[in-house]
Image (cartoon, rainbow, N blue to C red; front, side, top):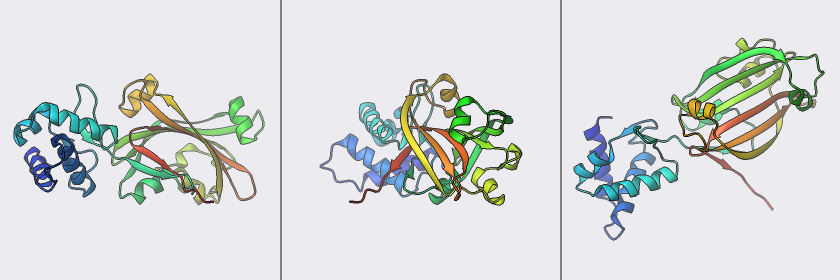
Length: 249
């Protein structure tokens, strides 16, 4: 979308926000409305603070406060010295076992991956214990950056015993599709979550600052007969993923 079209869309939304609300909140709501109605697509670039302020006759302080609120909510992604992009926040339910690709497609986005490595190797001691395999057993280990509409949002490392997946090159975009094709689609999983700061490598892969908060999940996936088919660690950007729980009494 051209810069003048972005400004026009924001101005149109701004006119619909009640005037008794503080101006920076009105601007925040106007941009938020444009994002939610998909006037702006995830990954679209917003004009700079100076351009927005000048075009809408606002102070840069007002614009900065509005953009900061949107960034805190994960609707915008900003890095010092870089452009401001529309975020691609994703909700992930922890009540169902779904693949990354399924989650992203369910939200009308296009899943993808950037390969970091894929290999057949001996399992580490931690992987042996987690997968319940012998010390001389080989595993497929794949590591990749997971993307939504070409934007990096997670780094994922999956480890699968070779008896279930004899080659890492059988995986195109979705590991679960490859496992399903061989009759080994997981039926349940045990998962734990924790937070951790992004390492320098994480920052490079996810286009975030080193030390930025990540949500890390560690998941063991089981077949119907109890065999463990996958061990997976996924490091999600904290500003684009919401994990949703359904609680029942």
